[in-house]
Length: 178
Image 1 (spheres, rainbow, N blue to C red):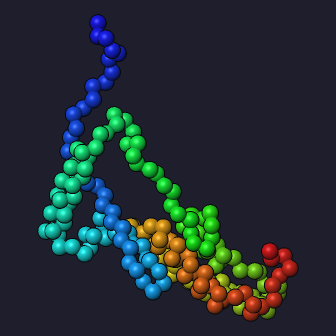
Image 2 (image 1 turned 90 degrees about the vertical axis):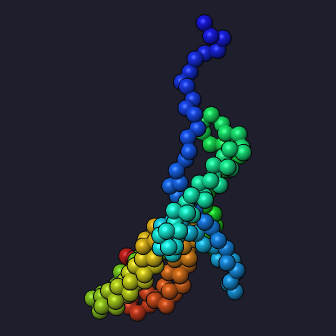
Protein backbone atom coordinates (compact mmCIF):
# COMPACT_ATOMS: atom_id res chain seq x y z
CA UNK A 1 0.00 0.00 0.00
CA UNK A 2 1.39 3.47 -0.85
CA UNK A 3 2.28 5.91 1.94
CA UNK A 4 0.29 8.76 0.42
CA UNK A 5 -3.16 8.88 -1.14
CA UNK A 6 -3.29 8.30 -4.84
CA UNK A 7 -4.68 10.99 -7.07
CA UNK A 8 -4.91 11.77 -10.73
CA UNK A 9 -1.60 11.78 -12.49
CA UNK A 10 -0.36 15.26 -13.37
CA UNK A 11 0.25 15.41 -17.11
CA UNK A 12 3.72 16.49 -18.21
CA UNK A 13 3.96 20.12 -19.31
CA UNK A 14 3.21 20.62 -22.97
CA UNK A 15 4.07 23.55 -25.16
CA UNK A 16 1.40 26.22 -25.07
CA UNK A 17 -0.29 27.98 -27.91
CA UNK A 18 -0.63 31.74 -28.11
CA UNK A 19 -4.31 32.55 -28.55
CA UNK A 20 -4.21 36.21 -27.55
CA UNK A 21 -1.65 38.96 -27.62
CA UNK A 22 -2.19 42.26 -25.88
CA UNK A 23 0.17 45.20 -25.93
CA UNK A 24 -0.55 48.33 -23.95
CA UNK A 25 1.19 51.48 -24.99
CA UNK A 26 1.14 54.95 -23.44
CA UNK A 27 1.63 58.07 -25.55
CA UNK A 28 2.23 61.43 -23.92
CA UNK A 29 -0.04 64.07 -25.46
CA UNK A 30 -0.79 67.72 -24.68
CA UNK A 31 -3.92 66.51 -22.84
CA UNK A 32 -1.91 64.07 -20.74
CA UNK A 33 -1.04 60.42 -21.18
CA UNK A 34 -3.18 58.45 -23.63
CA UNK A 35 -3.29 54.73 -23.04
CA UNK A 36 -3.80 52.46 -26.03
CA UNK A 37 -4.42 48.74 -26.28
CA UNK A 38 -3.39 46.67 -29.28
CA UNK A 39 -4.60 43.10 -29.64
CA UNK A 40 -3.77 40.32 -32.05
CA UNK A 41 -6.56 41.29 -34.46
CA UNK A 42 -5.35 44.88 -34.68
CA UNK A 43 -1.73 43.80 -35.10
CA UNK A 44 -2.67 41.48 -37.96
CA UNK A 45 -4.03 44.48 -39.87
CA UNK A 46 -0.71 46.32 -39.62
CA UNK A 47 1.94 43.63 -40.08
CA UNK A 48 2.98 41.75 -43.18
CA UNK A 49 1.44 38.24 -43.08
CA UNK A 50 4.83 36.52 -43.36
CA UNK A 51 6.01 38.42 -40.25
CA UNK A 52 3.00 37.43 -38.10
CA UNK A 53 4.15 33.82 -37.73
CA UNK A 54 7.60 35.02 -36.78
CA UNK A 55 6.16 37.36 -34.13
CA UNK A 56 4.04 34.59 -32.61
CA UNK A 57 7.02 32.20 -32.60
CA UNK A 58 9.20 34.74 -30.74
CA UNK A 59 6.45 35.45 -28.23
CA UNK A 60 5.87 31.73 -27.65
CA UNK A 61 9.56 31.25 -26.84
CA UNK A 62 9.49 34.22 -24.43
CA UNK A 63 6.36 32.87 -22.70
CA UNK A 64 7.84 29.38 -22.37
CA UNK A 65 11.05 30.79 -20.87
CA UNK A 66 9.10 32.94 -18.41
CA UNK A 67 7.00 29.98 -17.32
CA UNK A 68 10.04 27.73 -16.98
CA UNK A 69 11.79 30.20 -14.66
CA UNK A 70 9.04 30.52 -12.07
CA UNK A 71 7.49 27.79 -9.97
CA UNK A 72 3.95 26.97 -10.99
CA UNK A 73 1.19 25.87 -8.65
CA UNK A 74 -0.50 22.57 -9.40
CA UNK A 75 -3.88 24.21 -9.85
CA UNK A 76 -5.28 27.69 -10.20
CA UNK A 77 -3.70 31.07 -10.75
CA UNK A 78 -0.12 31.61 -9.57
CA UNK A 79 -0.06 33.43 -6.21
CA UNK A 80 2.00 36.24 -7.75
CA UNK A 81 -0.78 37.17 -10.17
CA UNK A 82 -3.01 40.01 -9.00
CA UNK A 83 -6.44 40.51 -10.48
CA UNK A 84 -7.39 44.17 -10.65
CA UNK A 85 -10.78 45.51 -11.73
CA UNK A 86 -10.96 48.07 -14.53
CA UNK A 87 -10.26 51.54 -13.22
CA UNK A 88 -13.31 53.76 -12.76
CA UNK A 89 -13.92 56.47 -15.32
CA UNK A 90 -12.29 59.80 -14.53
CA UNK A 91 -14.81 62.38 -13.41
CA UNK A 92 -17.38 59.76 -12.40
CA UNK A 93 -15.97 57.85 -9.43
CA UNK A 94 -17.11 54.28 -8.97
CA UNK A 95 -18.43 53.73 -12.49
CA UNK A 96 -16.94 51.19 -14.78
CA UNK A 97 -16.28 52.41 -18.33
CA UNK A 98 -18.95 50.21 -19.92
CA UNK A 99 -21.62 51.36 -17.46
CA UNK A 100 -20.51 54.96 -17.93
CA UNK A 101 -20.89 54.68 -21.70
CA UNK A 102 -24.32 53.08 -21.34
CA UNK A 103 -25.38 55.86 -18.95
CA UNK A 104 -24.22 58.48 -21.47
CA UNK A 105 -26.29 56.79 -24.22
CA UNK A 106 -29.31 56.69 -21.90
CA UNK A 107 -28.84 60.40 -21.14
CA UNK A 108 -28.68 61.11 -24.88
CA UNK A 109 -31.95 59.32 -25.59
CA UNK A 110 -33.81 60.50 -22.49
CA UNK A 111 -35.40 63.74 -23.71
CA UNK A 112 -38.33 65.27 -21.82
CA UNK A 113 -41.67 64.72 -23.54
CA UNK A 114 -43.30 67.79 -25.13
CA UNK A 115 -46.15 69.49 -23.29
CA UNK A 116 -48.28 69.79 -26.45
CA UNK A 117 -48.43 69.00 -30.16
CA UNK A 118 -46.68 72.26 -31.03
CA UNK A 119 -43.47 70.95 -29.43
CA UNK A 120 -43.67 67.53 -31.07
CA UNK A 121 -41.54 68.49 -34.10
CA UNK A 122 -38.76 70.04 -31.99
CA UNK A 123 -38.84 67.03 -29.65
CA UNK A 124 -38.50 64.54 -32.53
CA UNK A 125 -35.65 66.54 -34.14
CA UNK A 126 -33.83 66.74 -30.80
CA UNK A 127 -34.23 63.03 -30.09
CA UNK A 128 -33.09 62.19 -33.63
CA UNK A 129 -29.99 64.39 -33.31
CA UNK A 130 -29.13 62.94 -29.91
CA UNK A 131 -29.64 59.37 -31.19
CA UNK A 132 -27.25 60.14 -34.05
CA UNK A 133 -24.64 61.30 -31.52
CA UNK A 134 -25.14 58.13 -29.46
CA UNK A 135 -24.68 55.94 -32.54
CA UNK A 136 -21.57 57.88 -33.50
CA UNK A 137 -20.12 57.29 -30.01
CA UNK A 138 -20.95 53.57 -30.00
CA UNK A 139 -19.81 52.88 -33.58
CA UNK A 140 -16.02 52.87 -33.08
CA UNK A 141 -16.25 50.97 -29.78
CA UNK A 142 -18.40 48.22 -31.31
CA UNK A 143 -16.44 48.08 -34.57
CA UNK A 144 -13.10 47.34 -32.88
CA UNK A 145 -13.05 43.90 -31.22
CA UNK A 146 -9.97 45.01 -29.25
CA UNK A 147 -11.78 48.03 -27.78
CA UNK A 148 -11.29 48.36 -24.05
CA UNK A 149 -11.99 50.60 -21.06
CA UNK A 150 -9.97 53.55 -22.40
CA UNK A 151 -11.99 53.66 -25.63
CA UNK A 152 -15.29 53.36 -23.73
CA UNK A 153 -14.29 56.17 -21.37
CA UNK A 154 -13.28 58.38 -24.29
CA UNK A 155 -16.55 57.63 -26.13
CA UNK A 156 -18.64 58.47 -23.04
CA UNK A 157 -16.74 61.72 -22.47
CA UNK A 158 -17.05 62.71 -26.13
CA UNK A 159 -20.78 61.91 -26.19
CA UNK A 160 -21.42 64.04 -23.09
CA UNK A 161 -19.45 66.93 -24.59
CA UNK A 162 -21.43 66.66 -27.85
CA UNK A 163 -24.76 66.49 -25.98
CA UNK A 164 -24.06 69.90 -24.44
CA UNK A 165 -24.73 71.35 -27.90
CA UNK A 166 -28.22 69.80 -27.98
CA UNK A 167 -30.08 71.00 -24.87
CA UNK A 168 -33.78 70.21 -24.50
CA UNK A 169 -34.86 73.85 -24.55
CA UNK A 170 -36.54 74.27 -27.95
CA UNK A 171 -40.02 73.32 -26.69
CA UNK A 172 -42.16 73.30 -23.56
CA UNK A 173 -41.77 70.15 -21.46
CA UNK A 174 -44.66 68.05 -20.23
CA UNK A 175 -45.16 68.32 -16.46
CA UNK A 176 -45.26 64.48 -16.47
CA UNK A 177 -41.64 64.30 -17.68
CA UNK A 178 -39.13 63.60 -14.97
